[in-house]
Image (cartoon, rainbow, N blue to C red; front, side, top):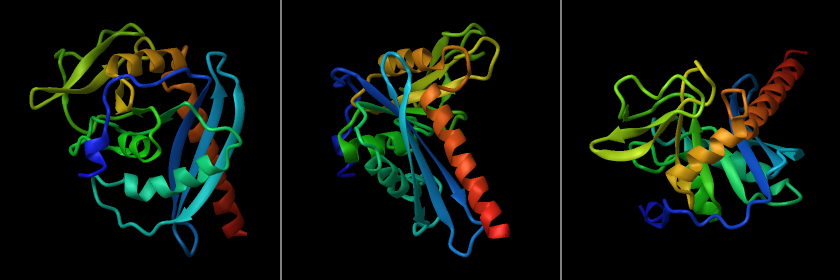
Length: 215
């Protein structure tokens, strides 16, 4: 609750020059299960990749629904430490405020670092879209995600006809700005470039580790 009390849902972003995407995969193929995190850094507004960083950490926190950030954040922090330049904003592949405790991975990471973060999830954890049929079919359409009468995020159509993404405030970013930045980072594909590239990076690292163990 102490960290949760520091959460900011309004814009306090400042000038954005570097944007990062963070993602985590769990690898249980070896004797010691690991969390593998990737952080990929881009220039803004050019969206050119600047650098990427990987980190591996042993899984020491048990699987508890709703508390996945405690399993993922140590590896993400390790990957962030490997960057030469810090990001001004981080896209997280996971929930922010749209969480049963209103404090998902993006919010947890943002408060720990006091950095602006956005939760960008491929699936809905809680809540219902305000519009019965969800957002419109055209890219850029969105509708609030509601839970017990509270707006906790947005269902956003980032690509025409594709399944929506579920965007929520992480820390120091309003929902409206989080949606606008997400749409800007998509530019065609369904998933924003920063988390899409980070996801690819951890998948490659996981495959390489599994192959080395198999040999």
